[in-house]
Image 1 (cartoon, rainbow, N blue to C red):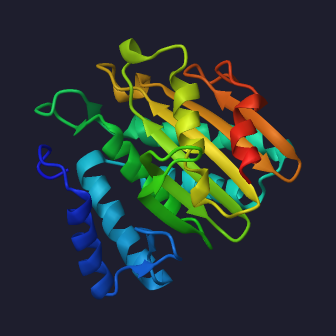
Image 2: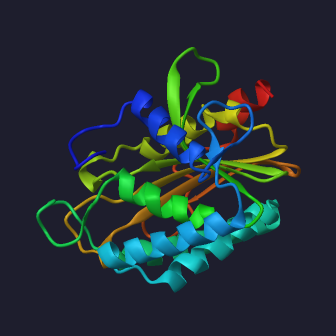
Length: 260
């Protein structure tokens, strides 16, 4: 978005990324269209410093809270096993909620703080993902959905040599939540499974409440489907911080595993 009102078209994004590519700030990440990564640790470090400074200025984010969430995401990418997965995701839920509670997210653009929408949540998760070691980040990746000719756009893709992650981000007010809102978000993440060629895959739906309550009261919901070496599993955490699969079971993964 530009000035909060004009959306950048896909052609505009291509031009922007071309300039960054020519300037040496990005390099192409494999054969997937519109997939880029930072070319080296030096640029990642410099970009990280500038992002921290930017978000400290507009959001008063504590860098230590960002770093804590990064460490947990690194653990998830390193050890995607059932016996530790739920523990790691509960830790990530807690650490990311601490980040969100630090940000002054508001509904009124004229009020003090940051307008609460998917863009700011997406940016925070992008930055956390950028800090993980030995991973490649893809953001806003256009692709064709599984079992469909429809085009779609994956919010976040994170990969290393063994593990692939697709994240779908929502920012729904409580009044707009349905009984199936987390299931639908997870299905959307899984529809982009063709972007992954890794053996261990995680599909994650994250909803950060958009409402009039203070940041400290804002809720987060998380739902994950994992396809790893020790089987297929669904687990999640509801707005109260308790384990909850939102009525979703392992059958949700049948369409994905059938096409692998």
